[in-house]
Image (cartoon, rainbow, N blue to C red; front, side, top):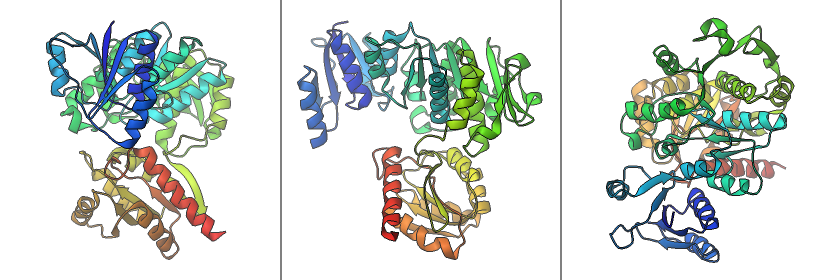
Length: 457
């Protein structure tokens, strides 16, 4: 392969550099940012003979052009330097595609979708492990894909379970899972993908390359999309019952008489499942379909269902204070995810929302707020915009409080008077105005809640 340039000094970029270096490639990482923390990473990587260029854009000239460019997921696929590289015939791929090149002999379960990816991925991984299958999750959850590839060189896996975002799909032209799952589809990431049609095309391309395809038949878009499908090996799921399945019932996974049924076999009573919300039942059915197709026993699936409590930052119960549940749903970074989260918790609810606003239709979200919320506390850049949207819809029970600390403390003050059952962080926004990512935002919420409980003791 020779000379390789990597764009982005994040987890994925570093993982890509390490596996390439192990294969004796000449690797340079470029990152246009610079900071003391990045300088520390640069110095650490220098000990492994990996060159890092901070505060610099990747150079392209006829003297030192690379043989390969590897792109981290956060780097837009259509930036001018990548367009120029492709025009010059320089191979350009994403970090996940690089991992696929090392792991293509191992079967993959690839999970994509607007919402539900992380929970479904975690469920699939847990079911496979409970079934004695050697696997790990990677991508947006768990390892960077190239870290997993590096580890598997000495410790091979039986299956790879990968949460794959649209950003990773568009830079992975050859990645072809044995099993592909499409959880949901609603407008998201349009600032990057420009149109809904382009966003759909990217998501669909992963399923087209998957040998077996699992789709959520309860998602309105996917249900209607499925009516026109001519794909082979499609498996549909539905929490509403077998009469709502598209396609062959022998390939269906559904609920019937409060039991999970997969491919006409009873798997387990759904009452074993501890997570709240219809959307999590949908995630459960898709995970069950994948696990059965991967050869996991019914008992292992039932054991997983009874022990699985969820993933961090997605409807995660943090604490109870004075009988009020404080729930972290920081991963709800768009209107649809936030609406689903709000719909899943008890009411009356005090909602904490805001951050860096995304494009999308907020109608269902606002309607659910009007039904369930006694107060909404607004933080971040989107606070004024949300306030205007609430006023236009006739909802006036909101306050602009700016920061997470102010929001949690104010929620505590209001909870008793408003007889709230839940304080829910479900931002409906990206986190980048105040935090590095949704995880950091959720951890901040967690710590503030813990600090409040410590003061009470």
